[in-house]
Image (cartoon, rainbow, N blue to C red; front, side, top):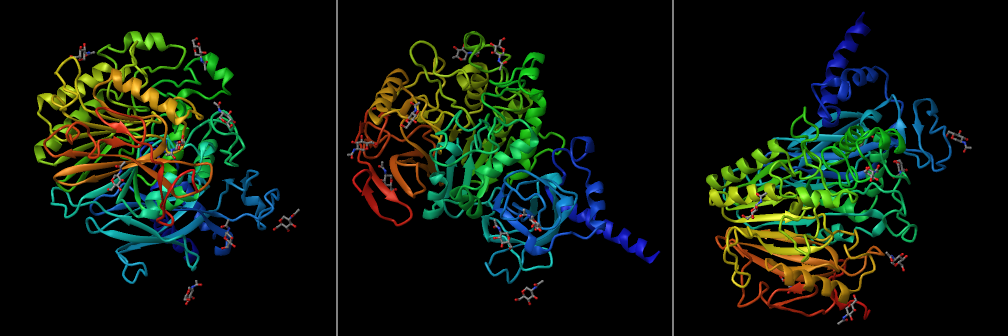
Length: 621
Ligand SMILES: *[C@@H]1O[C@H](CO)[C@@H](O)[C@H](O)[C@H]1NC(C)=O
Ligand SMILES: *[C@@H]1O[C@H](CO)[C@@H](O)[C@H](O)[C@H]1NC(C)=O
Ligand SMILES: *[C@@H]1O[C@H](CO)[C@@H](O)[C@H](O)[C@H]1NC(C)=O
Ligand SMILES: *[C@@H]1O[C@H](CO)[C@@H](O)[C@H](O)[C@H]1NC(C)=O
Ligand SMILES: *[C@@H]1O[C@H](CO)[C@@H](O)[C@H](O)[C@H]1NC(C)=O
Ligand SMILES: *[C@@H]1O[C@H](CO)[C@@H](O)[C@H](O)[C@H]1NC(C)=O
Ligand SMILES: *[C@@H]1O[C@H](CO)[C@@H](O)[C@H](O)[C@H]1NC(C)=O
Ligand SMILES: *[C@@H]1O[C@H](CO)[C@@H](O)[C@H](O)[C@H]1NC(C)=O
């Protein structure tokens, strides 16, 4: 009898601890059939964990993200350690508890793992600001996601996990809350902006460079954090030894988990997650190439494609991808009953509002799937088409108006695909960008014009090229490319962390420069464009100005800290365009590569080694 009673007490406590791991709530708290039954998982803690602490590992470091002024999401993964001989299926004497794959990745186990966590302003955790004890299990891929609360605004914190009742700890993480809503911010806020990190195409040096420089407060990732292809379909094949596992096109929940896990072995990606809070959104490849609401380029929503592509439907494939993403990324699921919703916003004091959009998975009208390009071109101007769906569009326009009315200095919009029109003479460059959804773009611009919304900074990724433009409504308001007159903001579109140039992975710097010059000639608002370098950019956001610095990576075939400063831009508050220095939009009138309106290209190859601080000319030792 006594025994039974103690079990009851245990189960109440256990339920609370399971609930503390937010991943048990995902993808839907109120629809258990869509998610995990916490009650059933908790029931398993009646049996003691079969693993001793030395049989468990923090397998993929730590991560934090979605910071608010008083809370932040902390992430880790703690799984049973496997024998070195990965072919041995009787693992550590607990064969009955596992199934696992050839890489020692546990797929299913009934047993649970208990983990404790704490967060503090000091590295020695003398005084914890918040702490807790939670469980994880194979139901959520042994991932752990907790929300640390009761934190102070715009403050650096350290956090760590440990296996319950042991001194086995995770790596030490660092994170930072954002300024309190509506409050003045003492210093400029620095963001690193990334997109399109493709594992087989190169080392993720770009992520590590900001860690080595310790140059930013927060990291934004605008999507294509992973790619779905099998090895060799998109990448260098085996030459870098970076095989994306499982080595096939990914479709199942296991596949998506395993693929993210493979990416999360890159040391620079791990370092970025460990040192900076991330605010990521997905683009298409977190599910598959050129996704929209009902399909993707390799999977039509038809019985025919269902049969040919292994019996996975579009909706189920998306659900698998999204579930793995929420398990592995240190972010909040905004609406527990809408697991496709990732669009959300952050208020950084009264300095800027960050609006993160999903122009891809949520409710996008049909896109260019390669076999229907002409059709999408023909309907690109239809008013019914949307990149976001009516619900997200209404939210986006409202957030922009509210932000402006509240007096936040800047509106920074984290978006996937390039917003500005990019004409290539005959037609546009890419109907998979906003160019294929003209009415949605017009509605966005009308909202800005009609409500006189100032100081707008649109961000984009996806294209694998850098494109810096004045934000203009062509054919509606006159625009002067020289002065920037008629512009209502700026678009900073960044290149890829490692995915290849749209002109191909082996394009020469001269050919890429010529192509950029061709596009700049046709698109007067495109002030600087570069199709050669992989890299990222940093933004420094202050009350008077936003400064942007674009970086190119000279070599990603090895792990190194090299980068080249490509171009710098300033947007002064109230100017609503790139700041002009005499003629050009860079202070020196120069850029390292690509094409610059009214400026010159001077290729110095002057490379900064962020590891040693040394500067050298790349290619000349
Ligand atoms: C897993 O943990 C054990 C015990 O703490 C340790 O010996 C082993 O090196 C770890 N394995 C990995 C891959 O980190
Ligand atoms: C597999 O692991 C078990 C338990 O650790 C051990 O007893 C056994 O000898 C191993 N088998 C092989 C073939 O290595
Ligand atoms: C953890 O380390 C401390 C200090 O070395 C020690 O006193 C304590 O017994 C250890 N705890 C466990 C569970 O090993
Ligand atoms: C999708 O359907 C179109 C039109 O029938 C066809 O051209 C295309 O190859 C199909 N793609 C797949 C992946 O089934
Ligand atoms: C978008 O705005 C431009 C400029 O006013 C106009 O020419 C075009 O017809 C508009 N398209 C749609 C679909 O609203
Ligand atoms: C680029 O060069 C590499 C190495 O020489 C080669 O393996 C690859 O096939 C080339 N890619 C293309 C698209 O030509
Ligand atoms: C950009 O600005 C930094 C200093 O803030 C400078 O070191 C760098 O050379 C500049 N880059 C270019 C291309 O002008
Ligand atoms: C810079 O590197 C490119 C190749 O990336 C090369 O074509 C060019 O000659 C180099 N320029 C200088 C000044 O070293």
